Amino acid sequence: MAETDGVRERILAAADDLFYGRGIQAVGMDQVREASGIPLKRIYAEFPSKERLVVAVLASRHALWEQGIARAAEGRPDPRGRLLAIYDFLEAWFADGSFRGCGFINAFGELGTVSPLVAEAAREHKRSFQRYVAGLVAEAGADPELAPQLALLAEGAQTTAAISGTTEPARHARGAATVLIDAALRRPAA
Amino acid sequence: MAETDGVRERILAAADDLFYGRGIQAVGMDQVREASGIPLKRIYAEFPSKERLVVAVLASRHALWEQGIARAAEGRPDPRGRLLAIYDFLEAWFADGSFRGCGFINAFGELGTVSPLVAEAAREHKRSFQRYVAGLVAEAGADPELAPQLALLAEGAQTTAAISGTTEPARHARGAATVLIDAALRRPAA
DNA sequence: ACTGTGGGAGAACGGCCGTTCTCGACGGCC
DNA sequence: GGCCGTCGAGAACGGCCGTTCTCCCACAGT
Figure 1: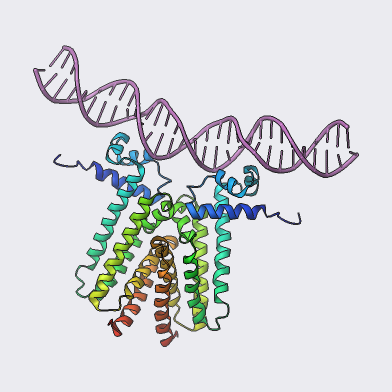
Figure 2: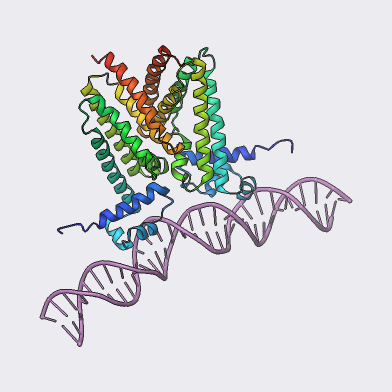
């Protein structure tokens, strides 16, 4: 049992590509098998149902997201810079040809009412991002109200970039965030 | 041919409820028949395929959206008030128990890659909203950059409210919009 | 009253879904 | 070398999908 053999990871990578790229319901388990090269029996040994596989894919996507914004924040000495780094990270992401919006928003829209596990995964992902932003806002000593406002800009940029197919929303969000942050820092929190 | 008999409207209303509430792929044509009380044969006489029905539902939803923001803007004498009315309209919408996010974002996430017609309907809806905001921003004499920023806040509020299940995002967006508008009006466009 | 037409209800169709089962080949241990 | 458990390949299953077809009744004109 020394190593997982990467089977789980190969399934997750293939399923993530397919689910994110084409929509979850539009992808059959046979396509996951074909793309991963892992037999159906083994997939079902690892994930007892498609729903569980979806949840696991979302979990891995959440980990990637956290790594991404953490890496973007590296080298930014002040909280203000780390907050703005979020939008730089978004711009790089939007420029990726396979970008298709926030996988959690997409999954929630598709399965939110039919799968409580998927709905909860999306809620927890967004809560976690809100906490991250709130932490930086607190570090900066700004009004806590600033945090959800900055998060809103990031969410809006993701959906707008997905539908329009451009990267501009990241720059618009960054510009708006700059104004909001500087206004909040001029009149700091009690 | 004096009147459409409302058949088309009944189909659209039932389909919209179901598609928006449960997701498009999760709803079968039989459920549309049952909910509308219109026989399948007549539905297919009116809409040649499910995809066309989806597009028609999105078109009616677009009309409702335009009416909603237009009505919210009534009685607001200045562009600034009409811009902020967008977020008041959103808050009222979020408070509706059946709110489940922006139907166009949901449809795009679910079918954007598989149905070009649905993708185009979503794009056109968002473009139209951008034009509306841009018009008000121009009326106000503010920097045109303000328009996409305000739109971002509205988009982010919709997805955040959908996933969190609260109405707060509307107030957060309104607060951020106030700051952005007033900052832009202090340093007006060339 | 008889025929013809149109529209209603629901069965039927081919196809794909998620999931499970069968079968045959392979490799480790005595 | 012979047995046994393991595992991969793909068929099989029940069920639902979007779409079409069949059948039957209710009513029009003469």
